[in-house]
Figure 1 (spheres, rainbow, N blue to C red):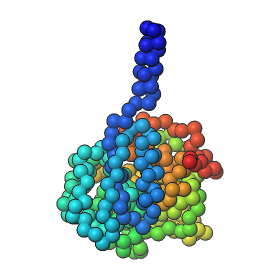
Figure 2 (figure 1 turned 45 degrees about the horizontal axis):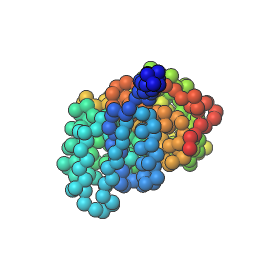
Figure 3 (figure 1 turned 180 degrees about the horizontal axis):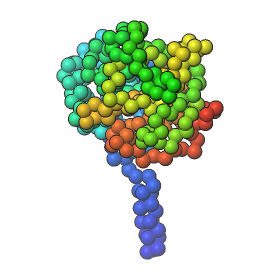
Figure 4 (figure 1 turned 90 degrees about the horizontal axis):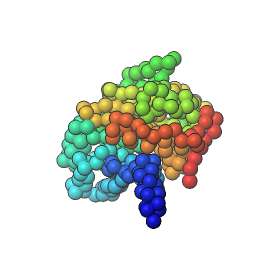
Length: 289
């Protein structure tokens, strides 16, 4: 009997070490989006929970045309906020609470079309670094591209936001020393997705982690465009991924891994997860069901 109790205790301890209980709270915001948020939010939730690091709540805004007055997520109770939102402005009270949350050290993750949101909201654009659509122009800030081994900020006139036809594409790591991308292959194949290009914004305190080449053959810009980046805002850490148009794109192991790592880094400034064995290769997509 004592032997069984001892074995049970050892197993319990090992399980706790290998699979620690989630200790951080994450909040996903959705409710409006020109993408299928009803399908993608559950995937985001599952991805974060599967990391073993987070418990996840969802705050769903009122629908388009409805009053935003009562939409007041309590950001301060969360370690990281993840936006799957692209829609109408929040109330001034909620905007101010969000800015204060990030500025005071809260983590934030912008997923795909969340960078289309709030073109007129100065602080939000500083927080995400780069944005698209919403009538953004050169007045919003420069394009940011990777040219001849260096980051180039292009202030020439032009629209903000675009993408060609959806297709699988190679993501190239440009900063292999950052905790989010450390240990990742230099190049990896991402599943069929919208390859965002022509994003522009303040791009202040921005670290470019990875890019992808938007080929003109797919109606892209013909430039190496930002795919993964981080931004510091006050004491807050921001992870911005342009990937994740659809459920199919979010099932890519590259998306899963970088989202989990990006959320952990935004929350803590560190990354503890190891590279999974099924991470995509340079020429082969890897997806999970």
